[in-house]
Structure formats: structure tokens, C-alpha cells
Image (cartoon, rainbow, N blue to C red; front, side, top):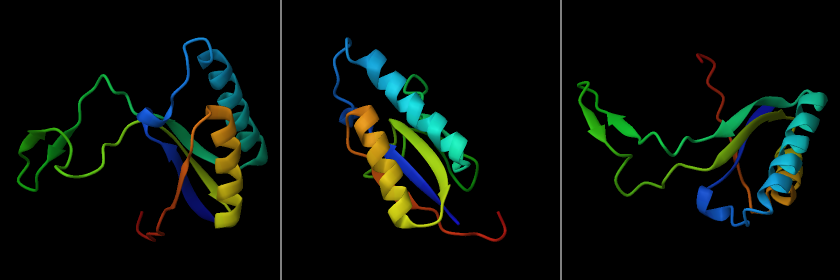
Length: 113
């Protein structure tokens, strides 16, 4: 089985304040279903109140993320699934619950990790 990252950037979540409780309820229900199915690894969201830093090979700390790289924010879940098709199916459930598109990415296997 492979691990898949299912995620969305914060800007994709365009819901009203009134809709947010339903989004939270529905997305938590999908996560609970993933836990019950035994495929949930971990998930959460990037804390936007804590700014990112880069740490160089020499230990220097630089404010901000990689220049020109994509901004990493929003929510994510990591699921362990038998196929890309299964990951897409779970992403569809999360997309419905969150009311926004989800990205699906496979983790590469590293036997040393």
C-alpha cells in the first residue's frame, strides 16, 4: 500500500462564515470514515499564524519559504491506500465535504525512513 497526500491550498476554501460549521462537520465525518476504514495516517492544517523559515545547510535561518516555490498552506490528510484510484475516491469525498478541489500526490517510498 502507498501513502497519498490529499490537500488543498487555503485560497481554495471559499465558503461563507455561515457555511463553515457544515464544512467542519462534513470534513471531520470523512476523516472519521477514513479512520474506521484503517487508511488514515495523519492530517491537519498549516498554522498560518506561524511564518515559515528556511534553514540552510550551514544552519543559517532565513525568513520565508523557498522563493518562487508554491505557498504551502491549507489543509491536508495522509492516507495509506491500495491504489491511486482509491486515493482519488477519498479525495472526491473530501472535496465534497470541504466544498473545494483537492490535490492528490503519492509519496515515494524511502526504505530508510
